[in-house]
Length: 419
Ligand code: NIG
Image 1: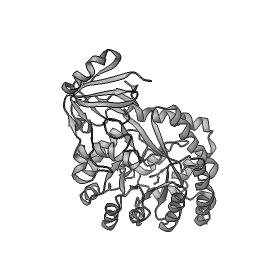
Image 2: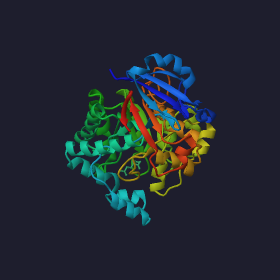
Image 3: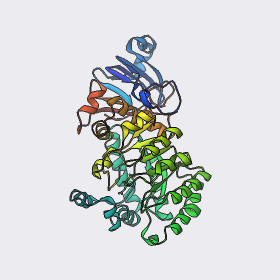
Image 4: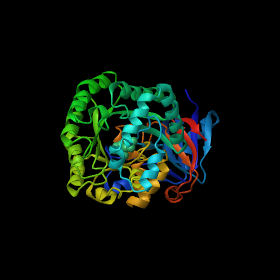
């Protein structure tokens, strides 16, 4: 049992308290439910009381001597940030591609030259589980230091059963050991492995008939994701994989319309995906399909920047009623960052999302994108006490001063893990 915690007198306690179920859309993305002079009482890792300091003083003072006191005067307090799309478990790094990209080489050019995902696949196959476990743990430390308390993590650098399992087991072990909570996604269809480059359908057969049943049986993943893109997996292949995942209890997600409009957004709607990711080239019809089906658009502005592509049309999506989440998409190629605050700034500066929408996209809507909004994503009575205290007096400043880590303290399930 952890000690009680009393967070006192926050300049802004940003609760994102929600009166309706499901992800937020349109104006609701800007409703942060801020309490000035806010206070939170936590017991056994669960939020028990939320209100103004005045409201909590009579209720908490009799028990104050047994509590750990957090003075949040002059600071803001938010839910722990949630990163709903990462590829953190991988071997090696690809800084040489950074230089190639600056010289103007494109993503598919690098991939087709044996770089990109396939280069990381080779390293992930070669390196030991212990080595990759340790390097991933360091990445998680950095996420936590930047205010992330939960993240989604994809396999997809194994592209064979053995190494996909290795990645997913590393996630499972880290989830048990590291303060950052991990939700796993099977993404065996992240690229066509070298061995099957002339017969992608044969690889899809393996994903569908061998990998998915095995991974579902071992309960190693909650979601199934596919890179649906020209020269990678077609919409037909992607649909087959996502339907096979569904039949085994894996919730569909999809990498869609990243390099070209390939009807990936429409497929996300058709298969009932919880989220569609990237969406840099999504058409008007695609946006409409996402809105109609309530699919969460998981936007990745750091990847767009690294790839030197136009960012996703966040404003059009929000106007159309698509719920938007944002993510680092941490991976060794197109987005080697562990900083959600940087991504929040990029969401504002490159996609013209407001600071309020951005905060919702990095907390509550991100929780919805990983199916965890009943537990995390807002500061409400009964929810897990995943909370960040930031050393800024208002939430706009968190987004405005970028490239600086404003984290003061991070609390995971009522335990101080940073600060
Ligand atoms: O989103 N699109 C697929 N996956 C990643 C690339 C990962 C990599 O380059 O290693 C992406 O860009």
